[in-house]
Image 1 (cartoon, rainbow, N blue to C red):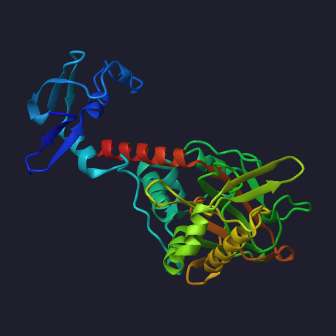
Image 2 (cartoon, one colour; image 1 turned 135 degrees about the horizontal axis):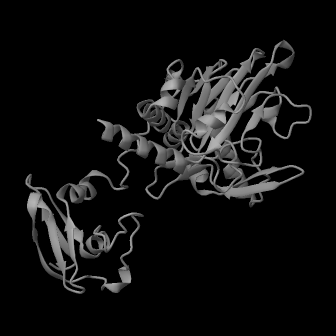
Length: 369
């Protein structure tokens, strides 16, 4: 038997499960607490390669293993074993596939009804699935009342506080601490990329939008990064490997963090984009690295502004724009405050909470069926 146990299914497919993995994943009440579902088994109580006294099949094809080191018996259901052998390497079958988009998404941003989202698990699941897949969705007909955006986040979990508070008001201010609180054009950007762990999702609720101008803009940052990788592998390498400084500071805080503009996970897949012209810090780099960074940075910025990738639309009162702040760059055109009021309320939600709520919603819908 060696270091693994080979399991073969009726269709002929087989998989060799490492013995240490099998022993560590026994889910009996002695090894996994029946209420907390947290592991109580101590990995260091068995050898690195546990001994198998016997192994065989029980009812409905369950694999039974009697361990020789501690005399413990473990049972593994065939469907559970097959799931981890073939179906998913990250054990998250509920995560929707990422759908990259460009300007062709204009007029086709997924929209969902507020009441369906707030009152049914099916509506909530549909919204969150679109939000994860496309990175953007609108909850339409959201009541135009104070802090409703926070109440919608509480449908998921809770709002993530930042240096701007639990929620923030996007409107013109006399002494603004952020360009969003002016009537200026905002180039497409991600928020709070000066934080080590910037918020995963942003919600913007349109309460009033009577001013001339102020149309919203969105860009799929993953689509831009993919376009750059195909067009200039060297520039992509710079932006995905060189940490750069992002910084926000005012009279009350000085928040800064170094990270690549294009973040990749351990498998080389896109994980996050940090791009904000306003928060791009003063880079203290050797001259050759500075030149390489700025050349790549400009190419990325040019793609962000390219009309082939950008969508533009006008938020209506009651529209709640929700988007992936690690992926989707957002902005707006300049507007004229003298022609009418423009007022949005916004807040953030962490990625972990969105993913958790989607998994729970899918389970609830499946159980109801």
